[in-house]
Length: 128
Image 1 (cartoon, rainbow, N blue to C red):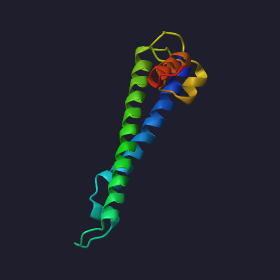
Image 2: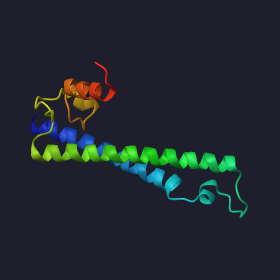
Image 3: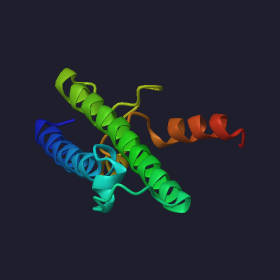
């Protein structure tokens, strides 16, 4: 892969990472790092209705799930940036063939070619 292309993918990866980190910061501020009282804006000392507590707990759990998923994506982006630095970016980690540019445009942190990724998914789901 040419240096110009690598710079393009590096910029794309860095932009995605920045957006994910900002998103994770918003999630942390609005849901995870606040108490139930702070998140609802209610400063009274009365207890909440059980249904309200359940809804709040569910919202916090969803926020944690989204933050966790975003964290995994940041990890994959960091790994792709490492591969750019060591010269292995754009090569399938399984078979060693070049990953299609269309795939890298859509998923710049892709580590497998389409054929190997399909095979991996088939193994996970048990389908062929």
